[in-house]
Length: 258
Image: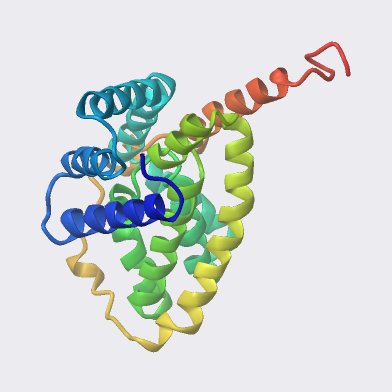
């Protein structure tokens, strides 16, 4: 078995392979990951049967611990997308902070929407509103696009139930409530930094919003859910996960004390 610096070089080569074949060659990520895992095993000196056993047991263990959560998060994201709840949340945040800070509102809207919704879907959902706000504020679309994109990615990579953070939590046997808390602690400053980057640098590149070419939401205003119903699919699971994390501690009120 290869260890030490040699194993690190093998892992680095696997990462390069994954990035190259998913981004450039356009192979399906699942196939690329399987090939990379098998290649790492061979390069590290493992036997073929042992490699297959390690891959299947690792995949099965990860799926068993996070599969239901990922499926539930996907369902929530689909509901938010099709019901128009994402747009309701965006409009609510804009009313709260004001249209003068609408780019900041879109950044935080992206951060909230991307918790259950994949960031690329969230961008598509919120793009019409993004264009409209850019036109009304007479600012470059680049400011709003960058602010929204970085807001979406901030929580997408840090806050469950998006698959990446959940997979990391499952691999490390980390408590989901703690992961959510720490993810929010990191993602909120990241969203603010992304907003500042958009205002300072992206504003130097003018892109005409052209709102008349933007697609419109499929749901009619009278068919949109209320603000409470729109936020509930995100807030309720987060609250339940947080309560579970609190209940796991031996201290009061749920435990018996230290």
